[in-house]
Amino acid sequence: MKVSIVLSSILSLFLLASCGAPAPAGPAEPVKITLFVGFGTGGDPAQIEVHKKLADAFNAAHKDIQISFQTVLNADHVTKFATMLASDTVPDIVMPVGVQGVAEFFDEWIDLTPYITADKYDTSDFYGPAQEAHTYAGRVIGLPIGVYPQVLFYNKDLFDRSGVAYPPKKFGTAGWNYDALVQMAKKLTLDKKGKNAADPAFDGKAIVQYGFGGWEGGELRGVVGKFDGDMRGFSADYKKAIMNDAGWKAALQFMADSALVWKITPKFSSTATGTFTAGDPLGTNKVALWECYSWASYLYENWNKNFTWNVAAIPAGPHGTIIAQANDDTFAISKHSKHPKEAWEVMKWLLDPPQMAQLTKSYGAIPGRKSLADGWLAEMKASNPKVDWDVFIESNNYAEKPNAESWNPAYRQVWDEMQKAMDQVTSGGAADGAAVADALNAKVQGYTDEYWKTAGK
Figure (cartoon, rainbow, N blue to C red):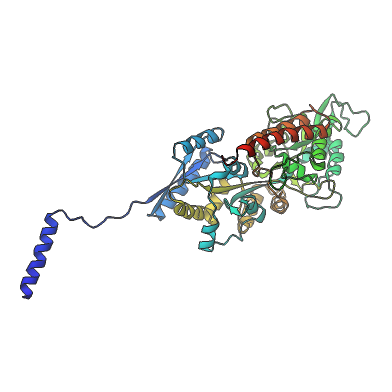
């Protein structure tokens, strides 16, 4: 009996094999995750090489997930990404992307909160203001890769030649406000005869050196915050524009007066360059002070060749408010990704300290993790020990809330109108900041009304 059972079993197996029974399944194909680069930095050849090395390292260590980077020119990112959306070929992750990039495609990103909660992922090491910049109504769009805080850059050589004391490096120094900056800048603004703007004999039509290069970046809402304006620019429900409150008018008036009355700032706009601006006013060696972000690091090499420079604290506004604007980069996962869980795993790996340190060094950013600050400081001090690099770290404590690039209705139209308003006063084309604010608010309200008519349709 036992022999017949065994023979029967062997015969059954033979018949199954001869009838083409399926072979055991082989190993599953790895999930492929695409990372789209183009919303911000990352397109430089050296940065592309860093991305390649990171992809090789990740792929060697992970057999179930494989990653690749897709890089496009920054100027083409909106068109390219919109085309990919329309053709359902959207990448899984966009990186690095700033607050503005997130706002441009506001409804495209998943909320990371469930993933953070499920993994009990520790976010305490990330800079708080940078985390808040990527959180919208409770939705965590991303976590900080790198931060670019604003500081006051200055040309020490011009200060020394004019016998003017350097600006303070400590935030909150008594008396350090924009009124004090104006007085300092007047002493550093010179005509062709060497008279400064504080001298009654100063010739404002023959200026050869300016004291203050203004604000770089064009984020008008951040400047408004310095003057205690509502940085959101809208009511809480985003239905009413309030870009003509007292703070908005004061900020625009300060810019107009800097160019037209005090003559401490060269006339410039975001769409035109000139002798004193050209995207780098400090680099002309004819502008003494300039508020800009730490992404100006790509300019340091040229500055080092031509003059001695340093950084100082951002001044307080007229009512004591200190706001040091910040640009913040993150990763964002598309809601059209077919593999969001795996994309989250890739994001976590890139946010780990070793990978973050490589990325931020390549991007010229301060790492988004506080634990990496000492390493960044040591590296920067070794590269240029004469600069007070600690000012950059302290600046992170004064970032604006909400971020000046944060979402609002009709985002691109409103951004363009704010830029036009800022250009009006910085170019010397308008002397009345209040009138510019009123006109801006009317335009923005029109776009806002139109937006809400079609929202959700």
